[in-house]
Length: 260
DNA sequence: CCGCATGTTTGCGG
DNA sequence: CCCGCAAACATGCG
Image: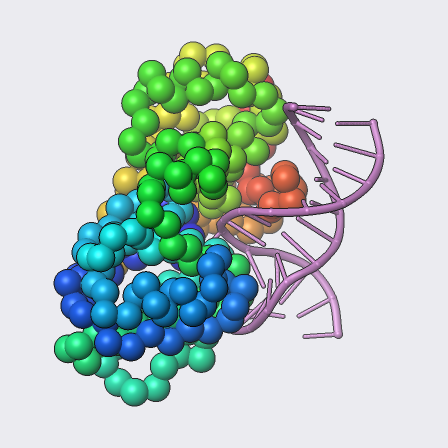
């Protein structure tokens, strides 16, 4: 559940289930998930409450009633689960029990997720080297960022210290919709290219977020639903190809996406 | 059994 | 120092 739209969905999920309830029990799982001692997590969270949530890129910052923040990163397979029955999920790494009997678990099968405690969002952003949240950028900000960026455009967009929130799926998507080949060099991108990328980045993130919230499927015109080698391009011309960039599978249409 | 998967980090080589 | 690549992490799925 990991790029900006999925994380936004997790925020709403916690908002609608778990705020303003006294935490009466704290259970922790795999040690590697916890970026401070598990005992410290228990200490801080017990008899505390989740107050409000903000998002930066793929991170959720959950403000605690008694000072500080619980920060959640979902890795590749993390998600929250709210329930009232007894059995906790096999892959629950943190389970908070509220005084109303509800329970909130952080589920994370592959254990690539992380949980942090911090007192300052600003310090946390610096420590993690987080760039600006993708959907908070103006077009001018976006263009300005590219003035100093080098390398291939896919790696640039995947870099969380450059822009926070984009990941493998939606970088491929915005490049597809912009007609730009993922191996294009950032220094070769013109004003029109950046303009298209910005428009499509916002559009893709907003459309996918809306789909998640409403439980709908994403548009079939999106590359997302044709993400396999040899599949027909949704535009009708080419066949989808797969290459590796930065170790990640990158899907694109050689007919529609021009190398710059 | 094999390859692949929405992420991040680390180490190596150019 | 910057860039690109491969591997590692751990588990499930087709």
